[in-house]
Length: 212
Image 1 (cartoon, rainbow, N blue to C red):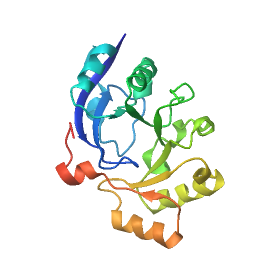
Image 2 (image 1 turned 135 degrees about the horizontal axis):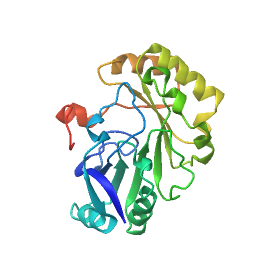
Image 3 (image 1 turned 45 degrees about the vertical axis):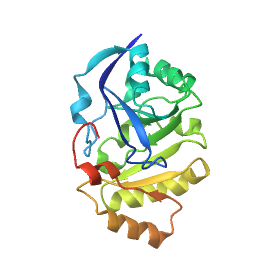
Image 4 (image 1 turned 90 degrees about the horizontal axis):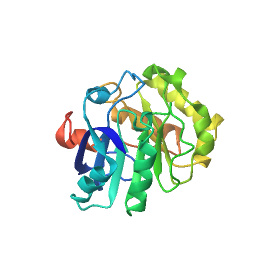
């Protein structure tokens, strides 16, 4: 059973509540979405087919318990569900980064899902699968990538209307090069929002490049 893998690499987790933890990243090829701020366009195509057994062998070489499955959009490949289950069965602490347009109902319950909610400025709000919110667990996280003040106000309204903080931790992240992190921080503090503001550690450490 194989998946198309763009890259497998070892780095520090740059986002989410696992910020700073040594992590193996499994990046799957392909994505049906075209967000304006996408920083992994290189993974839309290319990569190589790998058997799941070979993926697990590669992950084991790095000797860490944290694994993040990402993309592209990993759930666009149906066999991703098998990979997630096998990683959990192998004893890894697994997180999944998904863009919000694919059904998460069948994701293994042991996986921590990082679910993006696409804002108007992403140009992908129309493709959001809002029914996913019914499947969010307390161990998951919901992420908003914000491009401007209008995105922030929209996300704040969704936070309240959908009672998102009652579901799981909420992440607000400034779109790199589009929104100042300090400006977003001031808005969050001013409004006393119960969210975790985050910045992308890997870009601060190594800049915008693959494999970090």
